[in-house]
Image 1 (spheres, rainbow, N blue to C red):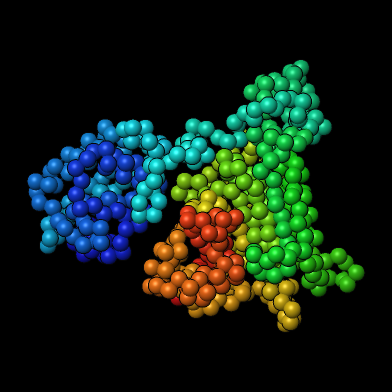
Image 2 (cartoon, helix red, strand yellow):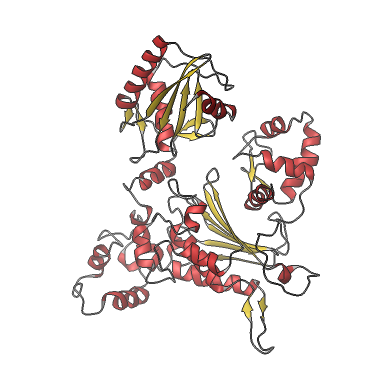
Length: 485
């Protein structure tokens, strides 16, 4: 890295991948920074740089002292040790130490006091929730949610007919498992521990899984318009049961709320769904199998006049991106559940589900919301099928249609400045607005009403801890603006 490259990097300011420090004197403090980067995808730490990105510079004595401090922090104050690479960049103001911390392969990384740190924006935060710790251990392959025993369950809670049908079809009646008790069978194929069912066993074959895990269901709503905040709805259902029952119920919900079109077929035929069934099938199965079962939340299936949204708890694991999964790359978040579900649900594995859905219907947006711990797919309906005064059906356009309703200039400016979750004061500052009333009436309220922005604490709109973030529709609008420019 030369001086020009360094200056270009510093000009962009601090973010989750780049942090500036004028100096450092404490190994424990540096260890926390290194652990946060290693737990959050890696990044760069620049020493000899002020918070505003201006270069303060270091002399030779400071460089030697800091290199020794960094070495001690990385090897002795982070567990397991991290292995950053440093480079001394000579500038007109002095030397800047540029340190690259790679994404850790042995997460979670802890500081000397046993604390787990992750990046949050340009800062870091201490991980304290059990669910987030569990997800980090899951990413390291140390524990998986689908094999955690479900306290209070027993073999009698299995749907005997469903399990027997599956077992005989897959393993055969005269298999090596012949003569074993049901408890032994479940333990041998990874669905229990001999006493209790694990989560995979419960969700695949439990008679009433929601008795123990009430949040693991699908909440489905069909709205007449295009906004999430609409108080009217056409249809709604809480879809419960095993994963197969949830899949069938959700697919039936979608089919009864989508249009059927003839596509040149006889008038007397039922017609085909306006969105290919293959695409919807793959996306539903993907949500059920790959959701984060450490997060106690439901899958949301929302149908609008212009789109279908499926929101799954849990953002994409590790450094996996929406582009990665669209090309077939995958990481099994729930390997045991996936192994058995592939013989029960229409799931083919090997990361082929998303590419197959996109191949059947390319008007699909994949939205990975890390800050909201959610992954959403937005399936756009053919415009001719929902516009009240649509022209005759045409070939689907080659670009994703714009998010409706139309966004005003003020709302558009607001959407473009939102990064993750932000307080009202932070939004006003980012927009350069001082008048709170003007901001609320012309920016925030219209964005909320249009369904492009949502509150992080919706049931307490006046909370002092209230923040705002983009909805899936808002993220899509911002993404579309980026394509236009």
